[in-house]
Length: 432
View 1 (cartoon, rainbow, N blue to C red):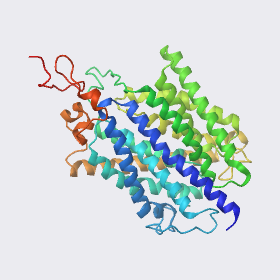
View 2 (view 1 turned 60 degrees about the vertical axis):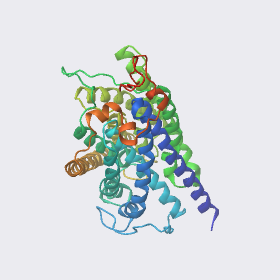
View 3 (view 1 turned 30 degrees about the vertical axis):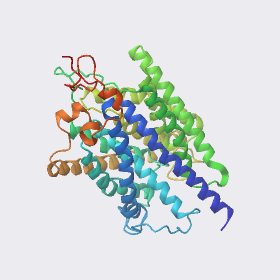
View 4 (view 1 turned 90 degrees about the vertical axis):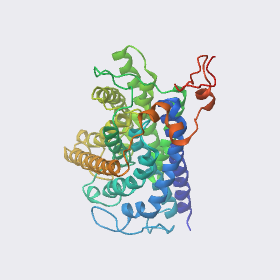
């Protein structure tokens, strides 16, 4: 066994661990962006659904993506047994684990549209069906030798495959589940249901930023030539530019340097560069990230104006930025770096690659949304609804779904009138 094979395997194994640890970032992001009464539920369901997604990916997901099949789907290699793939240049088992992590991240993004109002059972069923019917076909089209790969679709680490797919599923969910109680007033104006912990959200962005080096740089799946370093630099620059752009635009438009918007700008920059990190020069990564930071600001305002309640901003951070990131290679891909497809418009490639990128966005986005909304409608009819009752939502999903709060001391200690901090009445503590 040669040294390069071992080094490639070690690098991708480290990258897989980094991507799996991004789930910790998503736990902090979702819990911090939502209310305290749902914190334990959000943290726990993230771990549970990754477990379910991992089992489904082992059983059928990997085979549907990378198995021998046709232009639409893979049809072999189910119940993966740990074999090595000839010509891959690294351990097949390591590559399998790396791809499992990507599938888990896309599923976690999809669940952003469920936040604070979906039944736990809805998460469990959708985790299985998304991992079979939604994510694998799109991943096969682009990464598994499918029809979009034949057209030269550029998506190095998954702005489309992972992020747009998850975001379109989130859009389907938030449309069917409808807004959270208290989000919108009768006149259509929106209330800011603030998340309970901005420090959590800030930490989550740092953890995700670091994990993204495994996500993007790890997608080189090789150490030869150390190209992963170049990919990592592009990733970092785009995140930095997205952070600055979102802060500046919020300061200009709103008059305040909004912290959540700044954090979402960093994530938008990371999402946008995910497709193009291996195909563009460093200066272009700054431009891509900066545009993503501005785009996420206006996208969030747009969805809120349309009464689409997106507590985690999955539609803007992963959807809008994912679309821009996918299209960006059609402008900025260089002749030297475009190992897949053609150079972009600004490098003499004409509109060919931009057209392929746009076709991929439309096809993958529409597929993810239509299949997800069909799945959720069937689930709604057969599961007596997807959403918890009004009383359960007001109490919080920690208590209604799990019987205990993530912050029991804060949420169960009564005030001087006998009212618990979650809004329920404690008769034993009431003054007599």
